[in-house]
Image 1 (spheres, rainbow, N blue to C red):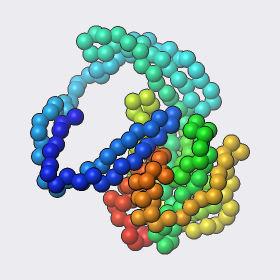
Image 2: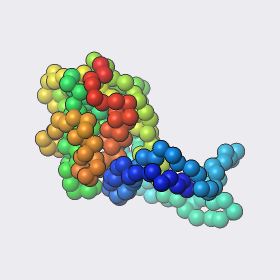
Image 3: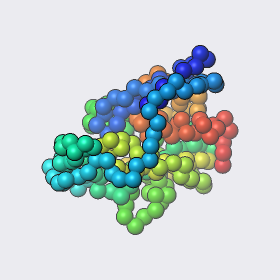
Length: 232
């Protein structure tokens, strides 16, 4: 990674992101007005895949995912193994619900892997033959009882490309209003949701109360695009 030095650099955000395996990743975002490069390696385009699979070995599977422990060849003809997780769903979605007054609606699912409650945006797996927007609207209604007149995809995110190539489509659902009761799946357990302003959501990220990677991505993207006024 190229290093950058700036006397006016200021730490802006410190968070803790938990991936699918709940392994914490600490990160710092630095606001800098006069950054200058101090050197370092430059990214180069490559014409071939530098890590090649020599044999694929399936070690576990169920109706949700498959786990591979593949034999691979690294650059320099070095041999080794690489763990890969593959969801059976073709994609997943995550939805940031923005109410008519501009505040955010966050759900509180219990996460078995971390044995804890988590503040998150609604999310779920996609289905073959259905568009991501259809799944996003369905997950929004199932987990919150809300509907939105304006649902827009703002990004496609790889949550942890080091182990999984699965993409999650991130949506903003603005102008949300309650049209029914939540109808979660039998395997889903939810506590009480919370409704917060954009500033309050950022504070929950900074203090480590919100640790879900997709939820942090949604909140920070909304911050970048503006959250002071409803956008519907």
